[in-house]
Each structure stands twice: as C-alpha cells, then as structure tokens.
Length: 322
Image (cartoon, rainbow, N blue to C red; front, side, top):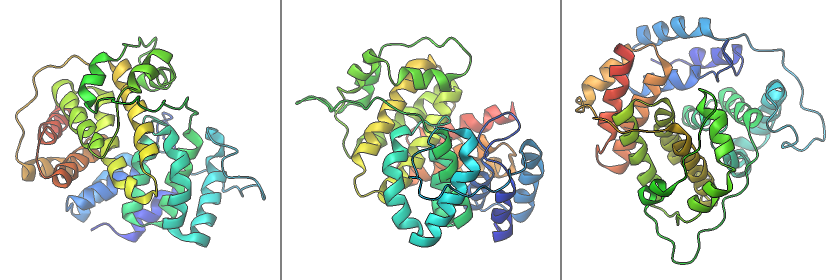
C-alpha cells in the first residue's frame, strides 16, 4: 500500500539525481500503487532508487513581488520555485493553479525530455500538495522557450503519420537526444512541415499509438519517452480551459523528437497478457520500466483497445530483464 509517509519522503530529495537526470521517485511509487504493488515492492523500489538521488537543497523563499515566470529555465531556481508553487497551491488550490500555470508550462512540453510533464501528471493524480509543488517547480526550472508552431493552413490534413513521414531528419551531434530535440523544435524546415498537421480531438490518440508502435519496434529511448508523455498529457489536458494550444505545442516537441531519434522500425514482440506485464513491472526496480508499463496499461484502457501499447509494455519488461 502506498502510504502518505512514502509520498511525503519525496520532499527530502532534489529535483535531480546524481547524474543530473530528473528525479521520478513519486511517479514510480504511484505507478506501482496503481498496479496494486504490495508494500514490500514499494519498499524494495525506494531502497534501490533512493541512493541514486541527491538530498534536497535548502528551502529558498520566492522573491516577493516577482512574477512566477521570471526564472523559467533556470535549474538553480528549483528550490525557489517549489516555495512559490507550494504557497500558490495553499492559497488557491490545485485546480486554479493548474488552470493558470499549465498553459505556460505546456509551451515547453519536452522540457527535461518530457519529465516535467510526466512528474506533474502523476502528482495531480496522487493529490499530494508537496509533490505537485515540486513537480511543477521541476518543470518550470527546466522550461525552454519555443518558437510557436504556426497554425495549420486551410484544408490541412489530420493524419499524424503522414506528416511525420514528411519531416526533415535532423542530425544530432551528441548521443543525447534531448538537446537535439530542443534545437530541432526551432528548425524552420521542421516548423513548416509540422505546421501542416491540423490537430484535433483525435490527434493525441494517434500520437500515443504511433509512439507505442515506435517503442515496441525499436526499444528506442526517445520513443519510450513519447509513450509516457502522451499518456501524461492525456491526463493533464482536462485541467486546462483551452487544451488545444498545449496539444499543438506537444505535437511540435513530439515531431522534433521523431526528427532526431533516427527510428528504424524492427519487429515488435508479441504482447504478453496484461496480468503478466503488471506482475513483471511490480517486480522491476527501474522507474522507467515501471512508469512505461503503467502508462501503456492506462492508455489502452482509456482508448478501449490494446493497440500497440501491450507490445510496447512487453518490450519494456524484456529490455529491463535482458
């Protein structure tokens, strides 16, 4: 059982682990809980995961009178941002804060490789005040400015796969796809092509299915992140009064990720039954495997079909156990 004490303990840790990657302790715990993990599995996960983390820095007060967006993109501002969001949530509640903050944060859906989006979605579902403040703070301090994606021209099509096939390929000069994705998201040729997609209420389901297919057929790390981020956005869109700009911004970073990932589709594994997938995920101590299986399971339930999500979840547990 996921206890309040386990979630409370997440506040003891910095937003970033010892390798500089985003800390996903709370998403891992909550995903395990949604998969009906027992207390021993939760405890085993934190025993393996916590030594990778860093202690939380000293709490810093947000500068009085400063607009909340003035330190966006500054990693060193996380401790101040967590104070600001903690106070804001205390005064106005999660619903009002999300309505006001998400439209700006989702202009950089791909921040930290989509981890801000992912952690925030889990924090919203966990309904944990401190974790939500820390998740929003992490997203804010990793935020990166974007050249906005132009509106689709009149008569534009809505087939995401067709548009993805037309994207220019963007070479990455490093092994890290995240900075390459941020660069690609501002590339004029990519912006022109991505803008030709008319996003609508079906777009996110299309992208979720394509991401699952790409991961199932490749095991690619970037595709893995597209799977979990698509599910995270699905959960956050209802928190916004006008979700379309967030969806279009997400599409921009999704397309940029595909452009740099160099995906070469292979053979997807046959999907294992969901009970077996959940059992294997509960036994995993890898937070990426845990969250991917959980996201695939809930995406398949949300859209009423297994599609590629069962195969993608199978790929994840196979990679973890290789």
